[in-house]
Amino acid sequence: MRLFMQSSTAGAEAPRYYQIVLQQDLLGGWTLFREWGQQGGRASSKREVFLERDAALVAFEHARDAQIKRGFRVMFSQGIQGAGD
View 1 (cartoon, one colour):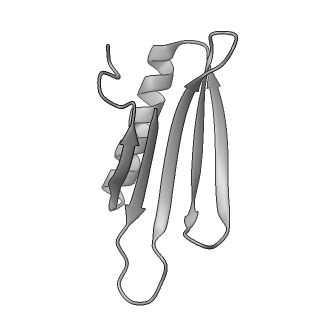
View 2 (view 1 turned 45 degrees about the horizontal axis):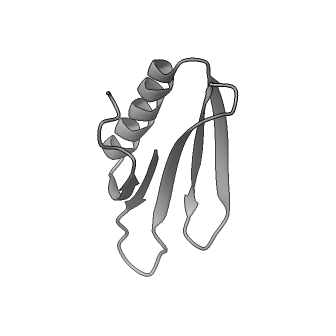
């Protein structure tokens, strides 16, 4: 699953972005990647590993909801439909 979010900016400042990617690894675990920064500038990232899909989904949703509360809007999503199935 991949989610790309962006904040709206006023003026000539480049928008900030936040990207969340959830992938299953070869051993059956799950890795949650987060990347954020200003477009065209420096970026920061964080990686978390989960043994169970449900825990990884909860972390994905928590990260998404936290950024939406901060004013980010979803610009692109891939593989989000049916995430709870």
